[in-house]
View (cartoon, rainbow, N blue to C red):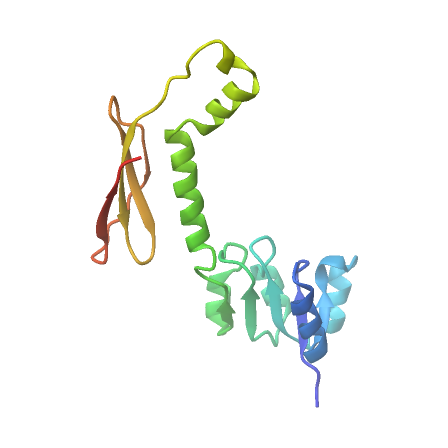
Amino acid sequence: MESIGVLMTCPLHDPYLVEQLEKRFTLFKFHSIPDKAHFLNSNKASIRAVVGSASAGADAKLIHQLPNLEIVSSFSVGLDKIDLAKCRERGIRVTNTPDVLTDDVADLAIGLMLAVLRRLCQSDRYVRSGQWKRGEYKLTTKVCFFFLSSYYYSALVFRFDFLSFVLFCFVSDECFWDVLIV
């Protein structure tokens, strides 16, 4: 049985994944090969898959050099480093890991919003510098409206005295309203 060649365009940070790829396929670590042109010329017929990430995928030049390429897989959300038009033209499947970070990004966005509204960084500097001994720190009061959907957290943030900023705007039939005063 012929061994399937998999071209890994960048280091993957999951040793288990690399181990499994090496166990099942002939894994070529393209990122560590010094003479890439010679390597591709010698191995292009055996490579049927490209594995990459948001930093290194498969551009039109690489795709063109791999005549038996069947799939490009990105271990990240973005597809910016993959020439989707070229893949579509050649019938090459493209996969990625969509929505794996959606909740974490939303949580971080809400956390950053609260840090800005409550001036947490300024308050931390105030306390650490010893200024708290000389007087009171001006507290903040905000009203924050959260518009939540099953796919995205969205928020419009208002201060009592002026519009502070708009973090995200999202419109969807699936949205429901929730109001939180912070």
